[in-house]
Image 1 (cartoon, rainbow, N blue to C red):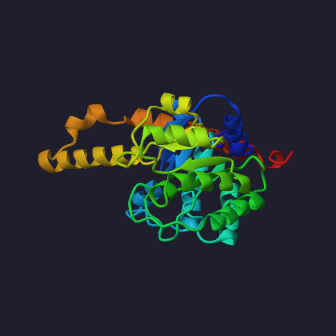
Image 2: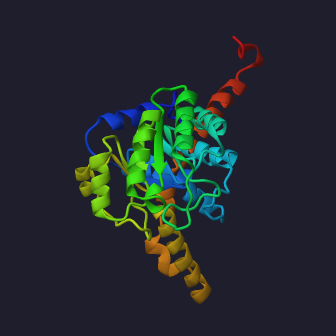
Image 3: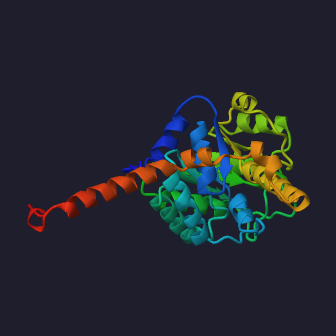
Length: 308
């Protein structure tokens, strides 16, 4: 079969991960092909980064992407993989009622969970200055809205707080505890500034925690094993794949401009065979042949025998 899923089990699989010991490494993906690569290599979940998807559209991460655009992008990803897909829905595309609709839309296409943050619009990258927060009770209402909206109780709600860089570490802890009371399953403290803050947050907030190991931000790059020792359940690498891909694309384009050929890059390329195997090209070819053979056999029968 080309489509392996008879049912979308994403939320159940992600909920199972919450119950297992050990940290889960979650790469950031921005299209179906990168998600398929992550699954092929053995990752147990993927994270659809709003920043990466927005950047792939040549737009800044300022809340410019619409819910419909994100739903469309995520559907391609969910349809391509069997592992859980976590979706960054920024501030939820509006207030509590908008958040409820967003949850219903992403749950309907098979996402395993969503991540919601407590910034105001226009939002900013969590590692930049100049952010502003909504009041904690307003964020709690949005979280409660996600809980009320989900049809599958296994659908995972991740609450992100950007408070550390705005109102301070203590407020981030207080917000996290409130968000848990409102029904969040996982807490994501954004832009912690040291190993000690990561450790202390885990000591103060007894819940499944998500760490963001994005590059070029204010957080140190801490190995997953150490984050696990601190008490974190998930670690995301939201824009890593996009940054590496864009670096490689820039360098090969420069080579083509300079040399008029891509020949020196052949040993650094994903081969045609590797690409076809990843996207299951030969499975499509096979089923197309099987359908053609089936119809050919029917068509060759005398007319009187075709329906009997």
